[in-house]
Length: 169
Image 1 (cartoon, rainbow, N blue to C red):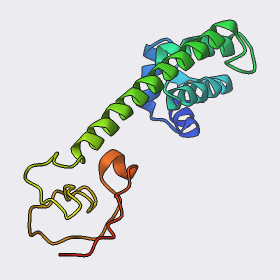
Image 2: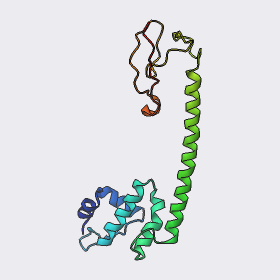
Image 3: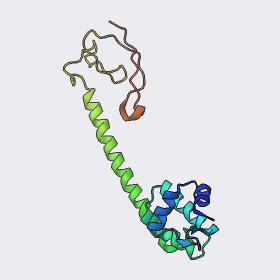
Image 4: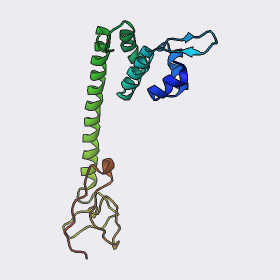
């Protein structure tokens, strides 16, 4: 098949296929007229590369999987080198998760400190002695209208607003 057909069947651009060829991941066979020619097995290589890329693997990570398929294995993960890449990637993801958990704890701590009584000198204190941040994370000055509680903007809405059941002054 020619490059346009392979691109259409794999759901990628011809430019992507040329890049894979340039990186040594896709064989570069030419017909007598100079056009690139691809085999049905090349479609499987491209699909494997795209699948790995979607999971966060780099093109260098994909090399052992492509080599495994080229060696005739039905699955790119059937070779020890591919399994080693999977294990390394899992370790990287675990490290990222631990980092994100620490960062989340830091942000949650900062949020807790920011909402402690007296933490915001320019905000209107309430009758309970706390600052007035219960309106969805928006800062209010003394005398500003109180809005309805709604999800906060912290962490893309993952931290919900504290319901405000106090009577308006």
